[in-house]
Image (cartoon, rainbow, N blue to C red):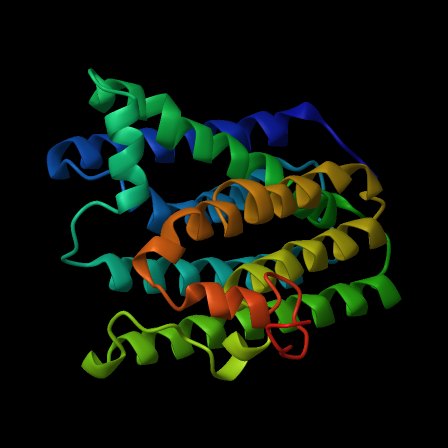
Length: 261
């Protein structure tokens, strides 16, 4: 496949500029949580940077861009709606506390810059898919199927959880129905599938070398900002969560099990 450094650097620059814009807004609002709704849009900006600077666009360009925009807009709109009117997320409150004084300045690179670079790096399979010139094939179909599976788990899981939380009688309770019966984090599992789906499409166009990107996303979801961070404190906030852990898979979906297994 044809590959030059220019699209990569242009995409990185675009993601960083978007991060700086978000950082300036966060200074006014005194809330860095807005980066969560910006996160998925950083991928779109990176992808548009790839497409605008690529020497030649491949047959997968429209397919990949449509998939990416659908994923990114849904996630950004959902997170923005979920956080509207709320105080700064407790995770970022802890980061703010751990990096004071001068957190407003430090957040430029600790929060916004870091997430821009991570989004750019994880999006590299999109560059390979856009630039590759091979015809669409079986791996593309498998990649799209995996993306659809992931989008289903992510979007339906978020919808089910939002509906559950909207009912006052469920305050403090643990969601254990729908997709949440089979995995404690269907939304994170869905994100995992989405990006491995993009990787399969990239491999079909010769982009096997982008393997570190979905691996990085998997690591983030499992060990950093996803499952590990969320479950670090959730048991103390929801006493029945320990029972949920004992009966339900953490990430990959599976049947419920009894606590004594």
